[in-house]
Image (cartoon, rainbow, N blue to C red):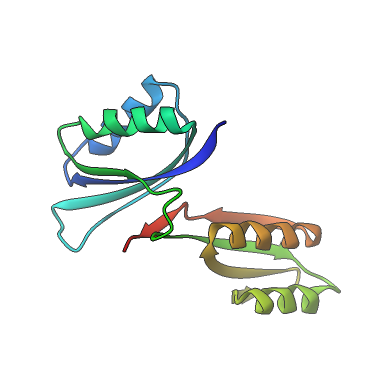
Length: 158
């Protein structure tokens, strides 16, 4: 059964490293669900977190292939490891009208921050465990989501 897997990749911060990783994935028929990368406390080292769909066997194979790339330092599938904290962040614009207070109350219940309030919409900032972000989006849908953007999975280990 194919599940979402969060892959944490540590690489040398060099030109083309992300293109090589994407090439390995696309050549093997994987679609990247989300990807986020940044420079670590050492500017010569880059951390990439990506989410892909696959079976445990497929994910094991793809992590081995990524690890063989020249600039790769470390690769780990952290999807089912309890010691890792996996978060996601969203910015969301929700329609409001007569139900503005209901939207604001729901946002407050989740701990979302109000970024902007306009006459017909409210913009919110929310972050948390992936399942909580999904639940927040599901509860906002009936109000009318005008727009949203997600960060993708980010994680920190033990």
